[in-house]
Structures are given as structure tokens and as C-alpha cells.
Length: 188
Image (cartoon, rainbow, N blue to C red):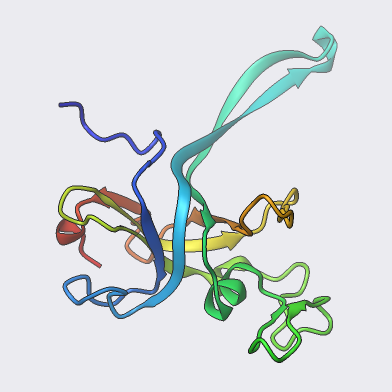
């Protein structure tokens, strides 16, 4: 059997949890559930930067290897205030009788201002499959929630309302980024 490869799409049903504290406990492992997900994908990204020379007509003369990052993307099939406030930093949350919505960053309760550093919003992120005995989990030791510039929420009659989420792994204090293993084998 081939070794599992994080560059391939995970096609197992599961849920996202932020800040789990005890993986031997029952779900949500001492953390906060973000919700059930589908179309989850985890992949490694790396960038190269081309150096061009104007004296050679902007021909590429060198290539510089950039750093590598790990990214987890999925669609939340269900969501609540915890999920919305984690993914969208300037969001008003509340009960169904109160008005909710995305606010302008100047009007948000704890605004994330343009130019602010992202690591202050980092979370520990766990993708926990429903079948933990046969399917592997993915754990980001430290992850930053990202909202794609092309974010789109479909609100038509023939589709479910789902929220796309994206998290980028950044190193923790021990320089760990991501682990892909059975839940019982992952150490926090």
C-alpha cells in the first residue's frame, strides 16, 4: 500500500475543530467545533521567484526557491457563531433574533485593522474524520484563517448554503507545522 500523501485531496467525511486540548477525550477533544465539512483538501504550496535581466530582454536568468506552506481548504456544511467569528474577523454574531453580518473593520467589536499582524488570530486546527479508526486526521499546530479575495457564497434555491474556509499553517514555537496521521498517534 502506498504511503499517504498530503498533496492529494482527502475524501473522507469529517469535522473541523479549533484549539483541541485532549485527543483522548470525546469529540470535540476539549476544543471548539467549527462544523462538518466536505470537499476538504490539504496541500503543500511553495513558490519560486524568477529573476529577470533587462539586458537580455527580461529573460529569466535565475530562480529563487521560496518557502513552503501547508494549506487546508474546505466547505463548512454547517456553521455557527464560533465558526463565523473564527473565519471572518470583523463579523457581528448573535442569536437568530438579532441582526448578524459582516461589519466594516472600523465598526467591528474587536477590529482586525488593515496592516495588523495575522499570528495574533492563529488557532490550532484539527480535521477529525468521522471514522477515526480507519481514516487519518490532519492537525495544524498553528493555523491562520484566510478569506479568499474571490470568496463567494451561493444563495440559490437549488444549492446548500456553505461557507468556504481556508487555513494556512505557520510554525509553532517548536517549528512544527502539520501532521497527517491517525488521531491516536497525534501529539498536541
